[in-house]
Image 1 (cartoon, rainbow, N blue to C red):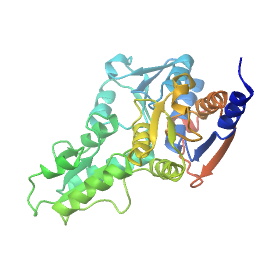
Image 2 (image 1 turned 135 degrees about the vertical axis):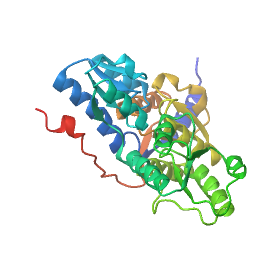
Image 3 (image 1 turned 180 degrees about the vertical axis):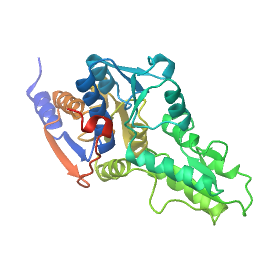
Length: 325
């Protein structure tokens, strides 16, 4: 039987448990555009609709679109000749477009506009005789696509040690770009090393890291000052979700990446009275709310949304689906 003293301690413990919810979080404009593109294509032409690579990196989104009739493929040979194919938000290398034309495929490009901006810069400056230094994860589909715009004149940098290993002369024209979903902390370290080694190196006037990545990381930094635990809701395949967890970790706050309420371990919150939560740019808000409900079951009694900035960015759907009734 639970004593009165134990019950009082139990109530005190749970009364003090508060959740700080970062804003902005979850879907960004590029992700919304990509998902809406697939939805609209299915509604117009019916299933199946083929999509090159997962449209965004989130299992919940992919499972829902599969139910509606989307088929996600990696090899265009899996797409019947003459069929429609949608390119994911992460972008593709030019060789994929060439292959699609050979197979007479009807292309619908859902590449995020901010990724397209990086592609264009890589192609443009490579054409001017620059060697492109691309900061990012070499196996990530976005980096593969960007590298393809300047094949043969691009070097991928994943760390400061990669910068230190570069052997270019000071006379070599160099231009650097970054993957749009990287950690601001990591990019700062690598770009600082680049500028120190090659003072004449050039880049875009504004950062290649997208506004949504930046905003979510800055919002997380705000709540990290006041909490002892941070839960990042996102898929383990999502680059920006993983970077959010790292942002918390680098600030000395315990952090976990979760993709559903079932993944929350009640042991994580024992003795914790201030918890933070955010979500990667490809995470549906419904999943976030499910996770909040689970935390309430574990004792959270108050939820405070902490706003870093308001986002009002909107990207138009691809013309192939925009004006079709």
